[in-house]
Length: 118
Image 1 (cartoon, helix red, strand yellow):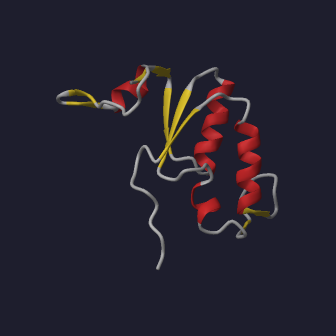
Image 2 (cartoon, one colour):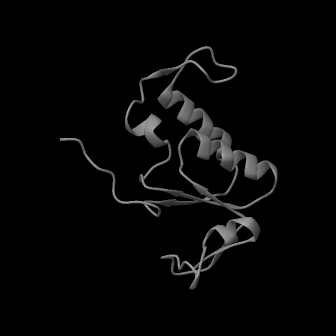
């Protein structure tokens, strides 16, 4: 079972009680981060700076979001400190920055398996 504390816990309340999580053991987290794209990865880092434990929920099996899944070679021009950075490099750097933080990554926990084009 997943146990969230504080404000994160209130997000998962329903009229009938807490939403059960599909985990066999109990884990305690302070923050639930929905999405493991660039913003989610940076949120993991910020939570670590505040000594908060976080669980990351994503529909994809690996971090990176659309940047990694759909257009990894796309140049991005609006990231502070980088006049130009490829999406895959941004995801790699954010993953490196978030690595020291022990976050629970729960792939495909908040969505359906990714759709394939065809």
